[in-house]
Image 1 (cartoon, rainbow, N blue to C red):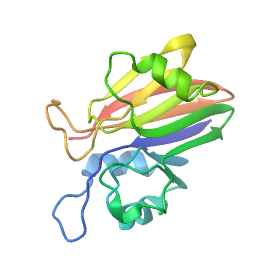
Image 2: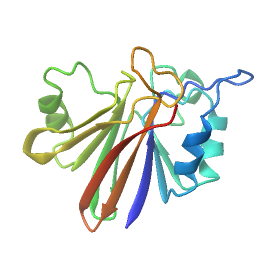
Image 3: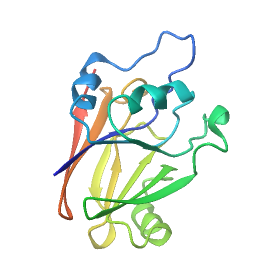
Image 4: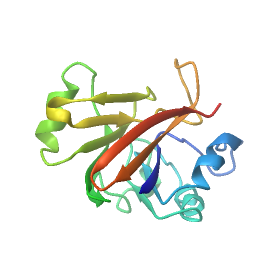
Length: 163
């Protein structure tokens, strides 16, 4: 089994006071792989996460410093599961169709941008997964991150409250 920690919208800036909550590190300590669905903001965040497990990240709209270093989209195979990543999943209405058209072969589409946790089967069983934000909850009741447990093509997804 592969334990994947999924983050998005961390918005941690150099010299700022924002940091990942302590509860996030409990999950990171158990990670086999880390996915970050954009708005990393500074490369040091990727470096810190890489101290826990291999990191795959995509470019977010606040990632000007990482332009050219991170791809806008990413597709990878993790333990027999085809995972696609993009920062902006667009409006909730019509998302399932848009993601199926954009990533027709993906079993799971990980996205960020809205800060709204989302764990829902899209079209034809394609899982649409937004971990929310562990640092900037906006109108959400909690700071969150996600996990995906992958085992021979099977996926168990969870949203976790971390603050």
